[in-house]
Image (cartoon, rainbow over the protein chains, first blue to last red):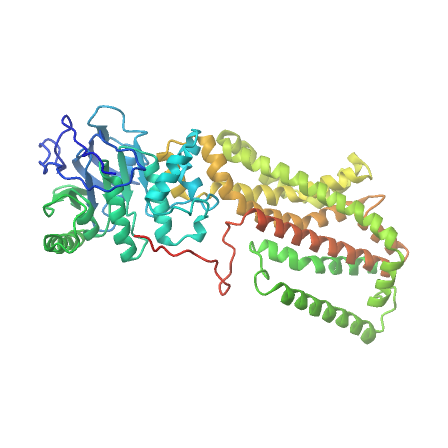
Length: 292
Length: 297
């Protein structure tokens, strides 16, 4: 079943990171949408954008992030790359509400609160070993004391390709299958904002490739922040790509937008433009980690 | 009296392997072969020990009231079986009641400590201080307060078990995988739901370790209670036999006690494994469980 293009006439059509006080860098309009995503997830049409205003953030006395403003365009995917220790995960945890705000401001473009509208997928699958796949996918509802919706949970499990494994415990699943279950658990929450922290870093390259294709279809229409250390993953899945670089004239790291190849994600990995962009991105990452 | 002095270290010996295994935190000697292989090895070990024992009697020429032969002990066990079984039943009741009460109090205390930060600051020092009092030193007091009946021994076993159960379970409740807690926060979980649906199940393997230790030390608590003052039980029977130089009966009682402790430990171990099938439970070199391959597009 085809998904409706997520069109938000009122939402700002801008994405990028800019120093405070300057208007955000304009971004390409969000035109084509990948079709073919499963019907399991209710279309997230209407997912608003997200604004983060960070005056600088220190963790345990050590400056991590510099001053910047970040805009996630409504219904689009933003990838965030950077050398190790540049604060990728910190930025993501800040948006997820897992860190004390400490002066940072987070707002949705529709004016409603952000808290409670975020789904988070971490580096590990974080499946509970005592719950089977179905139990893990229903974890959110169970933790909030809400009634489970087994039909929707099963549909989502089928959408990530785990049909027939509903009652299998995680220790019986391969790494790729566990990530599929984690993806289903994230998507069944049906949140407009999805935050992913290197979600496919723990699986081998072919599995990662297939999971990226799957995630691109299922996440379409949501406002996604994807932290990754894989330039190709960023270029394949994201509308916009940011690289964390040392802040000019200040401590900490700030996200800087980098050009992306034309066309809407998911992009073909064989596309010469994607491969060339991958090379450039890799070089700029290497430069950023040398500058650190 | 010299017999009693001998009997104490000898008594500890059969239980020691079980205790050592439990305190190492992981089961050793399971999944290391087929059941037949394990039975075979146990039989060979038992026969070897009996041979050493018999050899010792021959070599030293020790009189029966110091060290009876295995045959004499077996005879005593068969001849006095009805008496020994009656006392064993009482000791077993004390052990099981102590195990149940100690586990219940320990689990409740650990949950209370985990769920109530303000109370934790008051309770934790008291709990630690209570461990500074040697448990066996209060056995005469328990007898004084509760009499020679079963109550003082059940209390003794409960007190001995309480701390390992509380400490291991509380530790497990505290050491929850931080990623699970982050995930629960982003899902909007309540503190109560996090405790009951994440921290508690995640702490069950730690509690299982505590229960294995408890199963190994519970018989010690019950028997020490019986030594201090009792009118029945295997500990009482051993003191009684010792007073009459019936060393073979002492050994027979000791054998039954060790068999009971071992059976209890293995039964509990089996039960805990059956209840926690998701717990990783393999040592290097053992066969891993089957995993399904991800072959989907």
